[in-house]
Length: 490
Ligand code: NAD
Image (cartoon, rainbow, N blue to C red; front, side):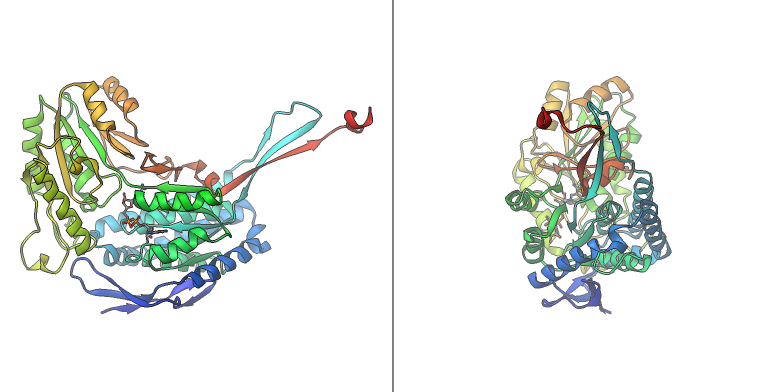
């Protein structure tokens, strides 16, 4: 049964002012929630309220340890409601329950980490070069617009909200239209933890309406964006008009390399996880596997056997490894790419269609799919599919391998499977990506910065320095002269 939900807008729980719409459960197409979309007027109201709230002494003057305590309470609030949040996120985007539980746990850890970073952050006394002393301090940037995609809402949103609150900013969220619930629940938890009214608002709705109005609002001082590259580029253009800082966490087409000396069991398990977990709806999906020709046949055999054992099914079941894709329209886009790959000369090794059976009829399921025989220049190897589709590519010459891996607009992540730490280091240094995993893949730590190069984006999230993205650095010079400045008095 569909649940009617409201949002937190300018300190009040209410309907936004735009038209009502529903969000669907990808596993069976049923409508699970109805809510109202926001309008440009709502954006203005939320941003104005955020600006007023952030300047109130109750927020602006909070001591670091008090702000940290607040973030710890948010982490506690997430943990108290962990199972409920995991189930809500499953209903929003159809991810298997084990995955959504892990995302909720990571969100709590993100608040805990930034609480520690906030409390222990030190401004600096810089070395003096005269009769003065100098300080460098960090001040909150102001109201931040946080725009997020549908694939891992609670994690993307925590990665923005936690450092922003730690820095003393206010946040106006624009979650993906089809997955608004995690941002709304995070706002509720933040309010219950004691974050003052107005500091966090959530504006559901379309990117072209709500998102754009947020980016253009003159009181927004930073956009923290996660999403597709073309939308990110549009945001960067608008931001350039005001020289507004942005962080852009964008798309990817990540290569994984299997070397001749790799432990093949580890490599197969890592590559299966890297491309098929989250049904491939992951920015860091390892969608191009370059396998050394000397081990290609064995690797392929083990990979295909591994795929046969994957459990595609009901996301509510703890046994399920792959749930449905987020929507039937997204599945249609994945299907077009596989068709294109076949037209470009690819041969299908596995999948390439929808699973059959009563369970799958109403949901937007798609089978784990592998193609070989494609050239790295094929569109299927160059463009982000954001689905469970792997291109298998043989390699033998290292220089050519590196050139092929880097011959792509994106530069988000890469994986290397090798027993030789020297060749892994050499390859890792040559790859143009923001992250390199060696003998592992798609593992994350909030203490380690994350972001892309090339068209995968700019800026970094996570890591201790993540707070600085939400601050402006200010320098102070304190004069110590006993007499007037010599220039004027000579
Ligand atoms: P998307 O770019 O379509 O949408 C992302 C967000 O931007 C949504 O909230 C959307 O409503 C909003 N938006 C759309 N048009 C806008 C506009 N004109 N102005 C302002 N906001 C606008 O992406 P998606 O389909 O929701 O998510 C999938 C994409 O996200 C993939 O490309 C994936 O690689 C990327 N992603 C990147 C990372 C990362 O950390 N690099 C993580 C997850 C997802």
